[in-house]
Amino acid sequence: MMVQVNCLHGHLLIKVILFYFRGDTVHVLAGTYTSQVVISDNGADLNDLITYKGKRDSVTIEGTGLDSVVFITGSFVEWSGISVQNSLSDNILIDGENVTVSYCQLLSAGEIGRAHV
Image 1 (cartoon, rainbow, N blue to C red):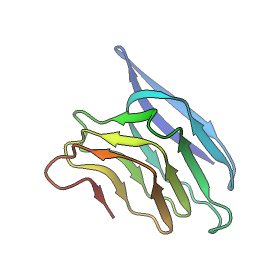
Image 2: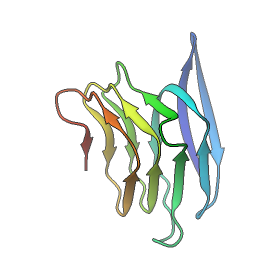
Image 3: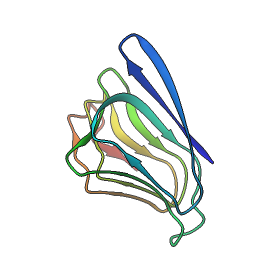
Image 4: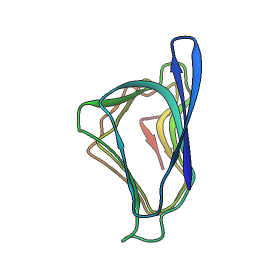
């Protein structure tokens, strides 16, 4: 399985492909990232989630200029300790089943709201 993260770094667009398996945890290093994240793969069940985890209050996804910053369309996914801010619309858009968002700050979303489930 893989997730693709598109990150702006200076004037370059960098695509990072992460390979992982059901039940794995993807640890995100401290920092502020200007990116849009799409998570479309599925965990197996509630005991075999795919977890994306940052150290609380040290990982931020900056969404300035983006309609939605994080799209979670996969099921049995956990997003934890990663703050998302400054989208034009939704900071996190969830269209999967059995998705958990915890220990996150969702700040300064646009017209529609902070999270849309």
